[in-house]
Image (cartoon, rainbow, N blue to C red; front, side, top):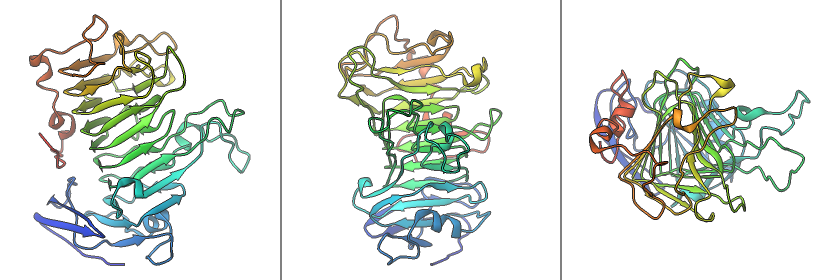
Length: 362
């Protein structure tokens, strides 16, 4: 392994097996751009690296770090559960393949999957292939997946199967793929009283039911959000299920994203409001702006949640979208330019600490 200490403000380039990225980093605050010339640890399935598993490399990373610890993951499929504890901040995972598809970190637990020790099922949070509790985490150029096979397990009726669960603050995902079906990407925080932020640049997220959900503040800039068909002629699922707390003005922002699907026209909803444990203070916020929407989204883009929670009481809106599914109807709330102006990438992410990841456009 290779360890380098870095201080101050600097401009550097990180290059590892063909992956070259550059940016500005400062001590104490994570940006999307901190990297250096060699990784601190390497992972490979062929035994020719520092570690044979991603988790082993994470376990070896220093606790309480104040600068990035870079783990280079070589091409291959890593079938393992990965957990980044709160004691391991500033971890960076970089896939060294030519494409994000070349490095896959995956597992296949679902909510209803029985635990081996007989203590019951995993539950939704416990189903996550990857769990992120360490702040200032960054991932680039790789794939996170939950490979739970619904058709192969008809005995499991609770099919929520999370690819990634985030509970930490200041997270960056750059050119990352998230694969699953129900509940693919769970962007949350450590508690209802805590706001956690995550930035997704040029990422690909796929799923069917509530596959981007939680109470975190999350920005999706560029990339693709793909709704998988469930074979229905009327309802093929929901893209989002936010549970943004009422005192947080910023939930999910999608800007310059492509919303795609092979589902029939008008059978997918942009979202529905999730109220965990029927919490009345979970008032979901979603804004889809300056994006392209396919015809899988129909004249009614939002849906009620079970338990009597109306989408009209949530904070759902669109602005300046295009595409065959970017319809203007009474059931598609639109912000005026003046109303949309405050809802920028920077506004969602800055917070009280002035966090400013390297974004395409501020």
